[in-house]
Length: 173
Image 1 (cartoon, helix red, strand yellow):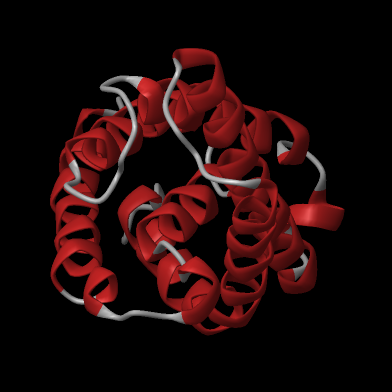
Image 2: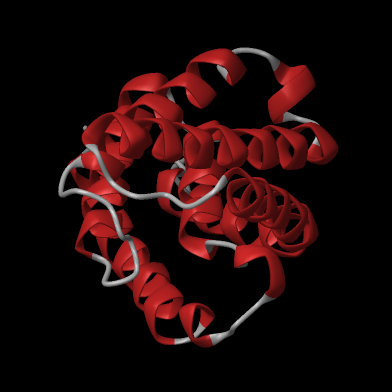
């Protein structure tokens, strides 16, 4: 069953989230920076089935909602991450052109991260949260896009190896 892989995934998610909150959020990067936790969740979603991706999107979104730097309403990131993780996994599931090609995975993660940020801005506007002027929004979206494009190729081998080690189903004889 999936109880073992999911129970092994929880400490990994918590460790990456803690690293995001304790280290990455402390950098004042131009253009808004990046979220290593979102990159991790999206890489994990691409490598998983759509059902597992929706479940991990719920967990990742819940943690992102608990973040002090989220700035949105409670539940906003949860909804966005469920939709984005499920969508990424659904679009990539069974398509080895995307999942088997590192460049495809990197581009998929970068554009999914951009879509998540865009959905966050749209839902913030719908919920009445102040998001800033148009130039600030474009700067943040562009900065997030470029930082994610720079960080994802370096983190992809680590995150893929973690996923493979946890969800590996081969038995050793």
